[in-house]
Length: 376
Image (cartoon, rainbow, N blue to C red):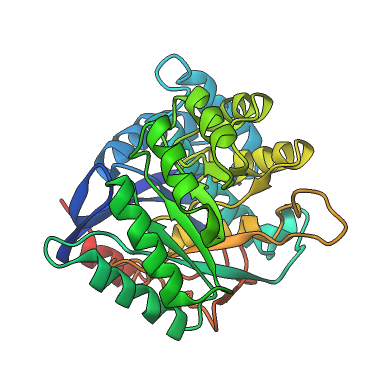
């Protein structure tokens, strides 16, 4: 089935209140959606992680290589796009744009064959997945010791048994907030930390030692992603498992992470690291190295559905007598069109999310919502 058209949709929406993380802030949410059409009118949807307008420009550059190609030949198309643009982007925008295209092609493949993506990828190993709540961004006013603690209490009341806390601002203040959050959610719920590479290695080690008694599941992006040496220093210098990978790309990037034993828990973003085709390869590599894989998820329901299809087939890592199931990152921060782009939103039930079982990604897109949030 040949590709006849490739379209992008750049969506943006203002937030009711800006929010910040360790190194930046935003007053809006944005996304680049990829729509691919084949000869019989079947449509596939994908999503690119990162700057939406820049991703749209890269996908536009792919167009001449996509029109007329066999949509079922996902690996061949992936290799063609990567090879044609290798000199300009072995990481970053070229690969995030490939990710959106690849996800859309898997959606088409599943629809043409009448099967969910996870069946075509060898699964499912599971039909639902436990989610953890992501949020706790900083506001422009107020005391985080008040509003962040109130926010995480809301997540536990909503049924989540795992939450992730944003840190990376100040070691002493972050440690105090971690203790307050642990006290608020109790000793049995999982608590993870995400510094968004806000520290250097010495600060990260100090923070890890200060809160080592708080039963922390992982310490995400403690330092800048390109400095794997500092990742190894943090792993060796404090006891909390180190996570990262949302800023890494392709099997070759993660091969370096794995062979240098820099990270305990890999977190590739399916909409960034190379799409479903590449992330399944990365996951299999991680399993061979005995490293856990927990996908990073940030975007609309399209990206969320892609992550769920991958989660259905993720190996249980690391190999052990009792399998350890992967987790789903479930963003709870404000996002006006995250669920609006879907005719049937993907919701959790007591902190668990079902894997969609419909053809392709298992979702139906709401075109009216896409048009409503599309920018010129």
